[in-house]
Every structure is written in structure tokens, then in C-alpha cells.
Image 1 (cartoon, rainbow, N blue to C red):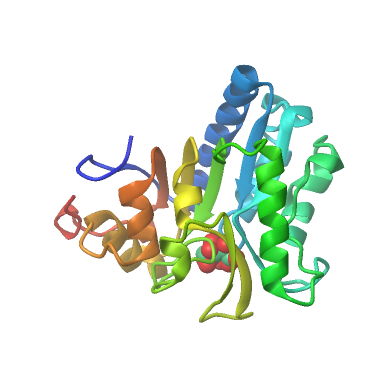
Image 2 (tube, rainbow, N blue to C red):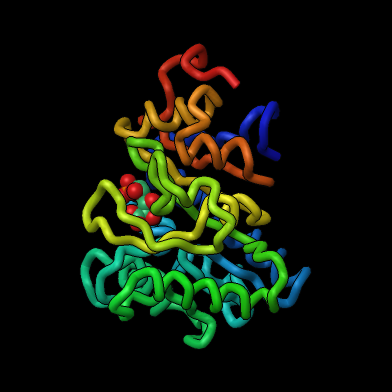
Length: 249
Ligand code: 6PG
């Protein structure tokens, strides 16, 4: 269990391949358990490069463990580009995972990027999420995230309104390419039953240390660590601080 005052659940692996395999096994088990408990499992996918290997493993090595017909796929965030654009998180997840498993197409819920106004797209996605949860508080079963070197997660960047917003999803302008993004808000992400954050590479070491230390609550990854109901950090050796002294929680 994570949250203020409790030691975080950090699992360190020799390399990104090992962390991806361990995280994939964990995701498979959590999806299976969610479907067994509630007849369906909601999975929140993020983008970037880190999760791609894990997505591919979910579609291959671990696919038989997962009740795909009971799974619903959502996104934590999306670049506001056409779904066929190489920068699209939806496109990446389809190629790495969704086109390779028996998850019914009507259970794939991408963030829309065809509206002229991204704010209209955010409202549309809020309706999609609200309908899925029948108007009740959205509590996703499994949310998969990464972090950036600046401490962002999903498309919630330092100083963003999405850190504390009461909305389900927002259209934001990110200090990254492409700037126009849709994102679930941090309070919604934090309510997920199980959150897995994948962190690989030396470039993430400082952001991970800041997130775990609790000394930088203004960083989205740190705010998530402090507010999430259940969070596992899946870390490779390169992203883990050299000495435990660098991390105090
Ligand atoms: C995105 C992601 C974003 C990502 C981090 C890490 O749309 O880019 O949702 O939050 O997880 O930026 O990205 P890498 O895995 O590529 O380092």
C-alpha cells in the first residue's frame, strides 16, 4: 500500500526487459483477479516508449493468463494528433497489444482526437468514462504509467491544473512535443485499485528519487505517490539511485 508515511512498493530489476516481464505478469494477475471479482477489468494504458515491451509481453507470453473478453482498455493520456499518427499513444498500444489479443473492439475506449476543440474531446472522454462507471466515481482496476525526467506522469506536468482538478479528464498544453494533450487528472488516476509505474533508464533517476522522497509534492509523480491508494514502482537498475541514502521516505 502506498500513500503518505508508508514505505513505497519499489521493485528493482537488472534491466528494462526484466522489469517489463515482471510488470506484465503482475498486470495479467491483476486483470484476472479484477474480472473474477467484478466480471470485468478496466485497464488504463499510457504512452511513451517504456511500456511497449510490456504491452508486447501481455500480447504474447502472458496473453493466456488474461480474460481479454472481460477487459476494457482506456488511456491515461493522449497526444492530440490523429490516431494514425506515429506519435499517437492509441496507435502504439494497438500495434504492441490491442491488435494482437481478443479484446472486443467495442471495449477499446481511446481518447478522441478528431474534435476541432481539444476541450470538447476531453468532455467527450469524460462522458465515456462516466458511462462506463454508470455515473459512479470512476475507479479503474489497473492503471499503467510512466514518468518523465521532469516528474510528469500521464500528461500531468509540473504546475498543471490536472494535478488537483476535480474533472475526470482535461485538455492541456504540455511543455513537450506535441504540446496539445488530453489527460486523466491525477485525482482520478490515484483512485485506481492498482497502479503500476514503469521507470527505466538513468535519465529517470532524479525524478524517481524526487517522487519517492516526498520532498517535492509539487511534482505530479510525487503527488501521485502521496495520494495513490495502491502503487507499485517497476524500476530498472539504471533508474534506481546508487545508494539508499539518496532516497528517504
Ligand atoms: C506520454 C506518456 C508519458 C510517458 C512519460 C515517459 O504520452 O508520453 O503518457 O507520461 O509515460 O513521458 O515516457 P517514456 O516511457 O518514453 O520515457
